[in-house]
Length: 109
Image (cartoon, rainbow, N blue to C red):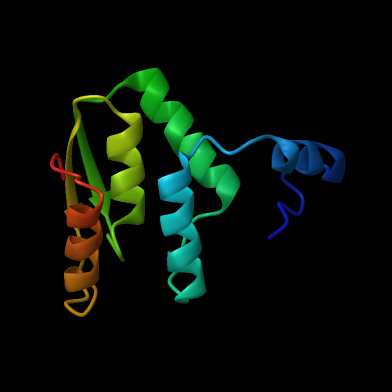
């Protein structure tokens, strides 16, 4: 997905050339989620989320729209000690999110 008019193509290419901030196990989860057809933020948005979590070190996070729990797991990885509350309105998504949260030992979600 291109940034269109937000940034020029050279800057976009540079950003995509940088290594991901995600550890390998979370990159594996990201790939699985994408392959399953669930919506996932762009790599740049994920890296920005990690950057802000590292920078701000929030104590509490509220996520609206859990889907399969990927972003919550990423925020737990990036925010040492943060308590994360997440809400999902689609009951069909909750079991998958809970399974992923348990799989990645995300005990602060």
